Length: 457
Ligand code: FAD
Figure (cartoon, protein in one colour):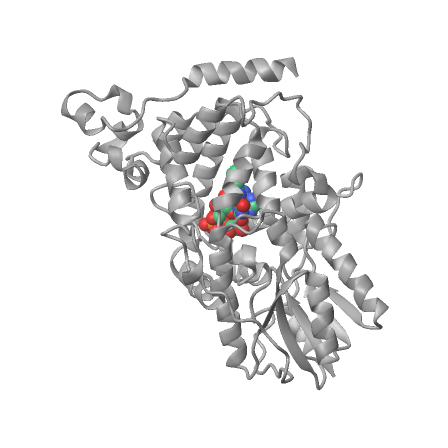
């Protein structure tokens, strides 16, 4: 008997329920990844994520080979390719993980229909890409939670399933054709500081995080220069690490750091259950505030300056340059840059969300769009009109200016917190910062414009 395991956002061997189920009984398995044309057509195939994905596929193949198997890679329409492999291997069932986006759910429906027409079965496994599946906890009056705190209360009462080990052996039938695995070396446009992908790299990072990051997370997670968050987000996005395993292992470590970390993992599930219930929120306001945002056409210069990190607001520019250099940005920096675009510049949040998705290696429809909406005040924030002041925030979360100096070379010679206010520099310091641009917007003007706009709504 043969099963096909379709890998999607779960590129790992540890704690993988679909693979475990497929291997039950005297079964052979075809581990399959389809480079889905639909994902590229939707504009979701950004260079940084393609590079990370290439690492993931190579590492998955290595792990499978160590277990007597290998990875089969195909390109094209995901449903057609799965059906072709099922026919070649004469498989009677397909296993895959459930996922929250509208695209993932329509893929699942199409696949089920196509397989059932051929008399084959599709098994979709929950709690692979999330800890608590969307829809599993709901308030009395709705199909999803619109506020995080009550969601988290119920989420915390759930008992996640047990963690599964990696299989010892994965017998793959011979003769199933595979394309060559992609390699990051051949891909253009990748951020120079992009992290390495793959389950082995993810497990290494996880071990280091549990050993020497988690305990101080509660105190240090907002420290921009300290860079004291886990950086596990791309591994969660591609599923090289299991969120269920992360929660179990953090809880075992215990303490305030572990508690704060588990809460962030719950945010990830929270956004997924919002998007699963309201798929339209990926593109349209979750809550209408009657904004008449400045658009790409009306605010072209401001948007360009923001994208390129030359707004004249040092902490914003540092963050936007980190994004391009690493394909990743610190959470506090994401909050600041998003608030700056949506509220201080009053530009449509979708413009910012699109730019983030072009660069983020962890770029994720649920997390990105729902966090952008949260900041823009069109999402689930219960204080939709709050505006983050980039100067106050910079002094609080980068008190010594080290984050700015790391990413903005024009200000590298300016000592201490003075790097946050280059317009105040005098004497030789002024000369050292001469190449740095003037602010493109006055914070008080931006605030007044935003308040006027929202009071009209
Ligand atoms: P840690 O602080 O170590 O947190 C651990 C994990 O918890 C993260 O890896 C992530 O999976 C989850 N998490 C943490 N914060 C959040 C949050 N606010 N919402 C949802 N999950 C969270 N995260 C993405 O994974 N992909 C995105 O595309 C994305 N876009 C964002 C856009 C904006 C405007 C903002 C404000 C936040 C966005 N986030 C996104 C959430 C968050 O910034 C990142 O998950 C986090 O910075 C990743 O770094 P880390 O792994 O070191 O996080």
